Length: 253
Image (cartoon, rainbow, N blue to C red; front, top):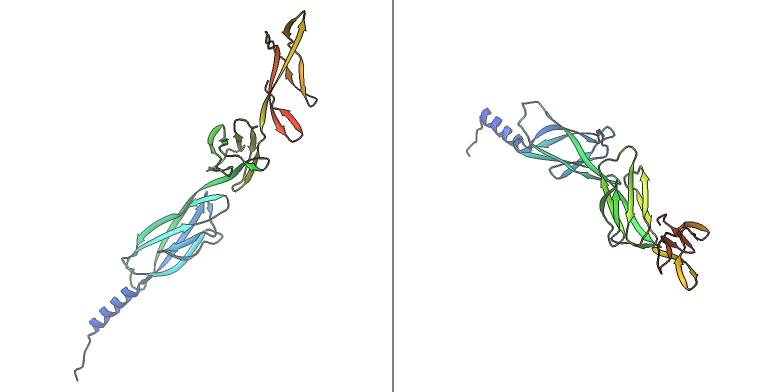
């Protein structure tokens, strides 16, 4: 029987090779922030495996084992109602540490987010599609077939923002002031009709308009007849919003 003899050098080399295959320990620290504040409960994934979440201070710390020379990918993700947060990603190469030393890899993860609110345009409970939504006086988009529109923003002015929903043939819905991410607004619109009142007087077989007459709807004055001449007579045009059992003008004549 032949005996195999291993020199101390061979044993050392074999031990180093086995250690390299098994991997080396490293300390990973991630500090997650959102809007400059610690982001708690953010999931930290390393090479596709979720290793844990950040604490109340936004910090995640854990000792992992990785092979030297390997490319390590880190992903930090967070979910919050009313927020759309883009995952933060980075990667690095694991170095071969000195004997008896555990290297530390520390990263600052600044998460980028947008906020959103949902606006639903309805008329008597039915959705209104293709209604125009404006924010701060600028058109933001149109409602979909369900009457919904999701308005996204990064930050609002200190005094809040002006929202409006309009559509031809309907009254205008407005919301002014502050709002919180995730809020749901129901923009109730009412159908609007145009009412023309013509005042005529007839004298000696001739018709003429009477200007300056007050016109009221449901005991509420909505305007006065103008100075139109001819057979049309003097008229007052009003756009009114129709609700069950009530007629309101929109203040335009």
